[in-house]
Image (spheres, rainbow, N blue to C red):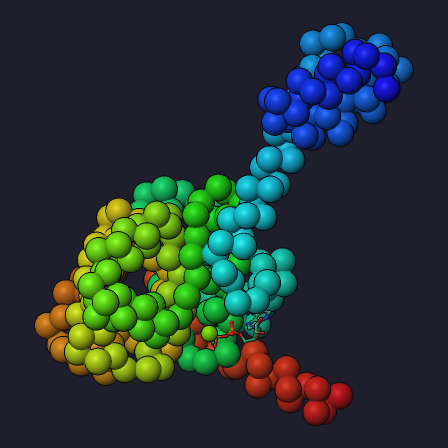
Length: 250
Ligand code: ADP
Ligand code: MG
């Protein structure tokens, strides 16, 4: 390594530009070979650093989101669920709904791809630079109930506030205790018009009292949740069931 290269390597380390350090030589050779200007060369070098940082950011946000499975829109077959409005779903992929603090509710029977679609929209959000967190409704209720008992509810609520999008999966399978209902109601009210929620549920709205217990609380909750929401009915044949039938027949 020449003295200049050693100096440059130290500068890039001090400036924390590892991608530039790794790639400047190859980019310089290319610039020379193709007769690029110094400015073009500089732009090409920094472009690599920016691209790498964007990729790492996406990777980091996907890890933080704690998705249970890697599910994306490329592997979602819209023809399997004709009741789902594909154009409306695709309109959500640009993530403006998250900037507007709107909600998404995916509602339908088991196996129709609600969790798959929820994760896929979460992935899109991570790619668009949004902070996303996935969890089941039951585990969130457990977490905030425990926090309340330990006197750390405010701290835990503050932690949850940092997510641009919270994906609450499987609302409806397990009924909540009165305290759990109250706390989840508080959680959703707190996010109202401040952040987005994506909820997947097997229960139509008329049956939400079955999980929340209290009718007044359920009405107030639905009022807030559905006020600025994109609601997708996803009823249909179970994809899982159909796949297993196909396997048995095949
Ligand atoms: P739900 O949450 O509605 O019960 P899931 O999203 O868990 O259903 O779907 C069950 C399984 O079937 C998953 O492996 C999912 O990837 C797959 N699946 C469901 N619907 C589709 C679809 N339309 N295209 C591709 N895979 C699907
Ligand atoms: Mg599911």
